[in-house]
Image (cartoon, rainbow, N blue to C red; front, side):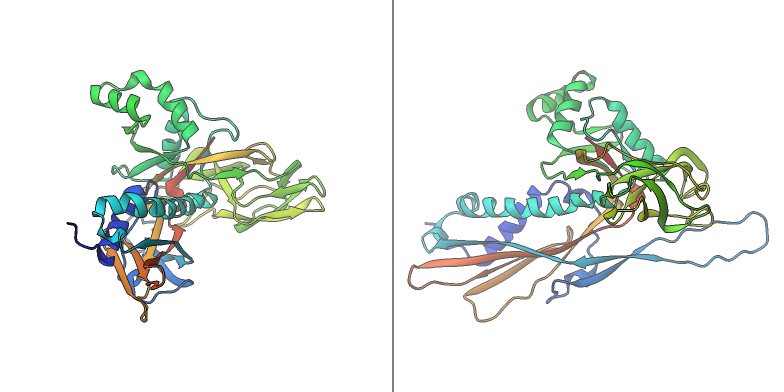
Length: 399
């Protein structure tokens, strides 16, 4: 006869199932800082993640000391998500496998989808982009071009690059490349699962949680309004009066403003792409757009070869109002997920919290008892926050 399942056993199984169900999340930076695991963390807790400094360097023997300026990215624990469920005393006599199939897996699938969906929404912070909005990629060239973007941004070649595609993107590329895998086991796996595995420097994954972006309803011939602008906003004009909205996540380029390699600061020959960081609507044909990256024409953090000229033409990626799924090509260090320990309450039947320091996940289950029905109502919670650490290490795949 099976022993009665304990809440610790159930919580541990819930964490195991969660880890196995995450697709995008498992490929990002999960450095488990001790600050993240502080017991009693609440929604709104802000954590600062350091980014490495950059230096210009010197030529010659004369000492030229540069300040080691470490920038920080704030990560806010802003999402407490959970699933509430109920089981009976009889259910607790099940084997852990049966209990997991009946109760845990359906609940955890909801949690995993929520975490991955929120993570993939980080696409709105990514300015590098390949593909045509509204057109599903069907050749390898576009994915190679995403690798080019990462190379030009000095992303490491260390086996930590991944691609996460929509189901439609996966179908197109697997069909296009069916005959290009030479290992028999790779071909077999491709036919059986529809997944590509590893190719062109990426580990390939499919996720139904890839977000869809809608390009703003813009019109006109937009241009830069004023020469030598710099910083995280851009003054523009030339939009059709009363008919121009740019949505957060829209991408655009500026004529003759090229990206530079962040290490060598050499012109890459590719126009610098900018992403709109806040939705803005216009009623007079002119607007000041919040952008990323900042326009910086010199120094250790240089992003462009030159500041834009007055009246330089602005080109938005994609036709107005086009809805397009967003795949992502990225290095592990482009994004991070942090997860904190929720407090264990008193005055309940049982409570348990299981943390995995290696993956930085912490999940809590609290159980009560209903004497009238002999049932155990439970709540399962996780507290987490997403952030884009280094946007230059990612590229959007427009579909």
